[in-house]
Image (cartoon, rainbow, N blue to C red):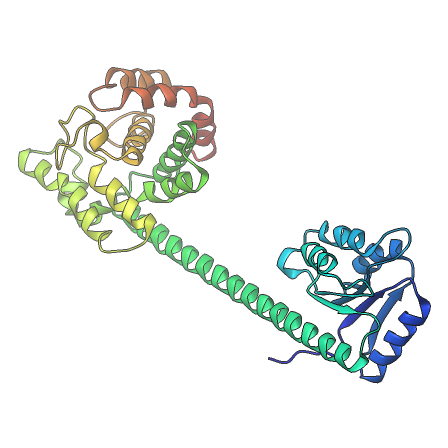
Length: 351
């Protein structure tokens, strides 16, 4: 890993002009190219912010602000681990002073008068460690950004595949129109209303359209039959939930796991009389309980070849009538409270 030690900025803060000049000349003679300095400790903070040094050489005994106060100002910038090292230079060399300097953020300590060769060695060591750590942080941040970008790309690709799969189901069952768009957005609104967090609502939004994906596996003579299904045909139609569950199985994705759950459970009933497993109450996933209400409401208020669209009032009355049997009562009540938002979505995505 290449680091430019000699090009690093060094800030000198010392009230003695002779000390500043000695340090500057010594550093420049050793090849350092970027040195800033001040003999007024009140200028330390603005110079630090302007030049963003990689090392601070700091005297302790100074008028106006002493070295401890300067360190407190620098620490207040909140740089944390990215704070450059501070090398304290002072004639005060007792243990109490040293400890206090380290507590304020100093990384190294040299007594005056100092040996210039030792000082240059410490400057180099401090810069080498800091610049290597800085470079590693930069590499880690770059890797994290790449991982995040790749994760987002995979998520986007997965959603794209899911959307195409849902479109394939719509082509198979051409009665749906914008049904899956509407009911999935209703579902996200209802999930938000009951207090689920944003990421959970987003999962429901993207999982809900797959609830009827299993209809891909239903023969056209059953799926598209204009008349009422007989007993055997209805038995075939009911298998779309297990077909959907199979299509969406064996995937580690949180989204597809939820989609499988919804596909399998969306014909379960709150009172336990649904299919395929006769689940009851909270045995049915909360996401499925949400999707079921939104799916039925949109189906009722949509026109189909075999029925006219119900009015919103009649559809709500049906939800209320089936509250406790088909639907969870609490969710029906919550759905009624978001009805204006639901109707706005319905208007925007009308067939």
